[in-house]
Amino acid sequence: MSRVVRPDECTTNHHGIMTPDHLDVQWPLPVMFGQETYSFSLIDIPDERYAEEAAVMSKKLMRLFYDLQIIEYEWRQTYKRFLKAEERVANLTPGVLLKSREKAEKELADTREQLLRLQDQRDLFNSTIQKIFERCKEIKASILKEQDLEKLRTTLSDRVRSLFSEDDEFWKTKFKVHTSHHKHHHPGNHIH
Image 1 (cartoon, rainbow, N blue to C red):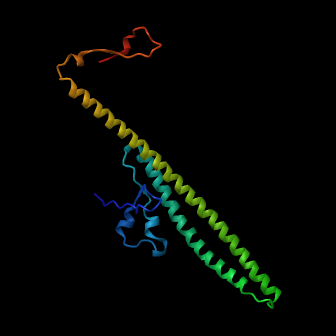
Image 2 (cartoon, rainbow, N blue to C red):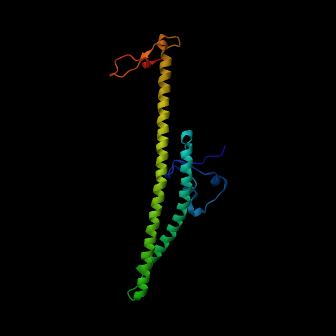
Image 3 (tube, rainbow, N blue to C red):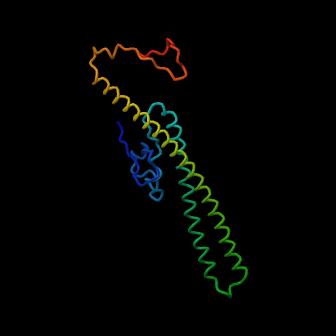
C-alpha cells in the first residue's frame, strides 16, 4: 500500500492527497512553485460510488494546477516589472525629456494592463479549483450524512433487539403501515 500524504490543515485544499510522482521524487517541481500548493491534486473520496467523478476531478485539478503554476510565475515576473516601472515613473525629475517620460508612463500602463490580465486568469483558475473543492465538500457531507443515518439505524435496531428476546411475540407481530388518508386495509401495508 502506498503512503498517503495530506495537505497542511491551513491550506484551502482539504480534499486532495499528494500524487505518487511527488512522493517518489524529492523535488519534482522548482522550489519557487511550492510543493505544498500543487502536489495535492488527487481527490481523496474513498467511496466507490464517486470513484469515477473523483478521477475526473483529479485530472482537472492536475491540469489546473499545472497551468496555474505557469500563470503564477508570469504574474510574479510581471509584478516585479510593474514595481520597477512604477518606481521609474515616480523618480522622473521635472527636467526629463517628454519622450522619456511618455516611454516610462507607457511601460507602466502596459505592465499594469498585463498584470491585470494575468490576475483575471489567476482568479478564474482559483475559482474553478474552488468549485472542485466545493463539490468534494458536498460529496463528503452526503457520505457523512449517510453514515450518521446508518449509525442511528443500527443503534435503534440494537436497542429494539435488546428489549425483546428472539422468541418474543413482538417479532411475529404484523404491523400496519398506512398514511392517515388511507384508512382501508391494503395487503401491501404489512411489515414483517
